[in-house]
Length: 141
Image 1 (cartoon, helix red, strand yellow):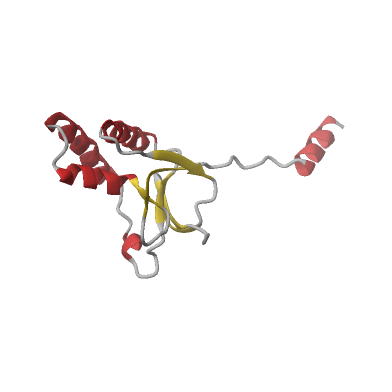
Image 2 (cartoon, rainbow, N blue to C red; image 1 turned 180 degrees about the horizontal axis):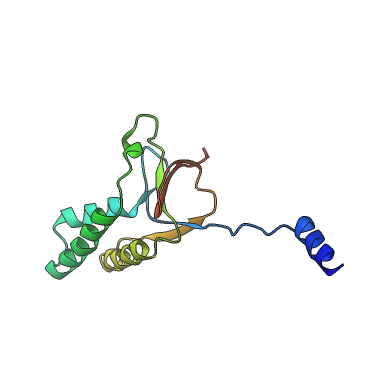
């Protein structure tokens, strides 16, 4: 009887899949293609190329950026025609990339760059996914 009750409960109340909250770091500046706030890498390259960075901050930014370039793929779909609105999100299991981006955020904030961390469980139409990131077209506003 006990086994029957357990089976009945399992059928009536199936285990829910955990909600995945994708993570994005973005600026306040709107991207002209996606019509969404630009991502952190736009702000990073703007500041790095501005000549305003102190040497130790530039070295720290480049250390994290080099690691990210070595370990994160740059999905080709971002350059495909028709994918101009696509934006990138970190999967929550991307612990080390997120840690490094947070270190970059701290440096950017020291120079007055406002970066927001946002999350979603629905990034849009997924165009690319790997173990650490998702590229998706967000729903139209």
